[in-house]
Image 1 (tube, rainbow, N blue to C red):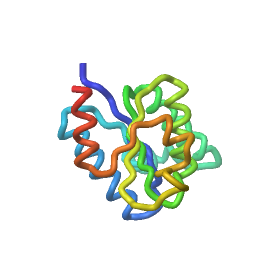
Image 2: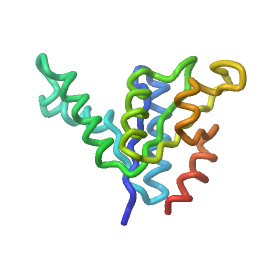
Image 3: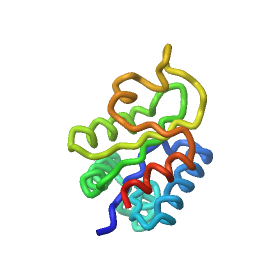
Image 4: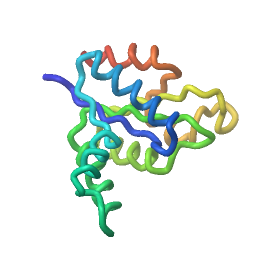
Length: 141
């Protein structure tokens, strides 16, 4: 059975969206099913389903639904600290017993010998490049 992988990460700049697209493309190239809220949120916006005062709840519910449907989560950890929404998605996934792979491509450290916040660092498998992500994902084929 094909595994489903949710892509978690900030979506606030063209660079962040571009990088997530690379991850989604890699996941699909390897034969997995990718769930990525940004792609599906755009479709809901086009249909007029993400408007009005409850649009934030709809995004939350969509992401939670995708996390529940996923077997694995790939979380982008780049930045001076992990995006707060991504941190929530990581915690939720860990609590649900899902495998989480974090990808941190920038060289900033969070503290001495810490790539990211220690709670995230100790709960996810961290890779440092798209090539390492591919190697890790191939273990689930």
